[in-house]
Amino acid sequence: MESLEFAIVEMELKYCERCGGLWLRPQDSGEVYCESCVPKMADLPVPKKRSCQARIDELEINGWADESLFVCAEGGNA
Image 1 (cartoon, rainbow, N blue to C red):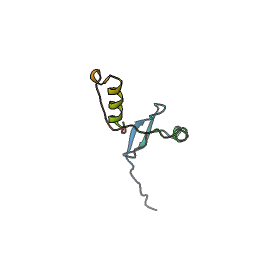
Image 2 (image 1 turned 90 degrees about the vertical axis):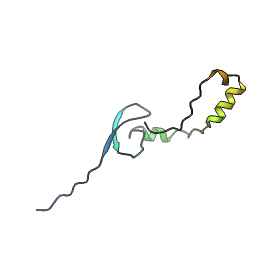
Image 3 (image 1 turned 120 degrees about the horizontal axis):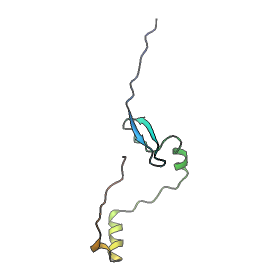
Image 4 (image 1 turned 30 degrees about the horizontal axis):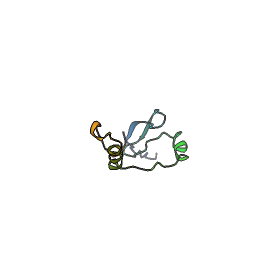
């Protein structure tokens, strides 16, 4: 009789950041889209990142800086 070896893969529940569906992904993989949304997102152009300072400068020019609350944070995985 042959011995069976099992690999334990830790998974985590994640929501798709495109469609909102729930799916399981390997823990700490960083994937944010479910399998059906990955090809759809690959077809979209990559957005240009704007710094928080650029947004603050733009609001100051338009007179909104004194009336606004600024929250600048790097994007991440939910």
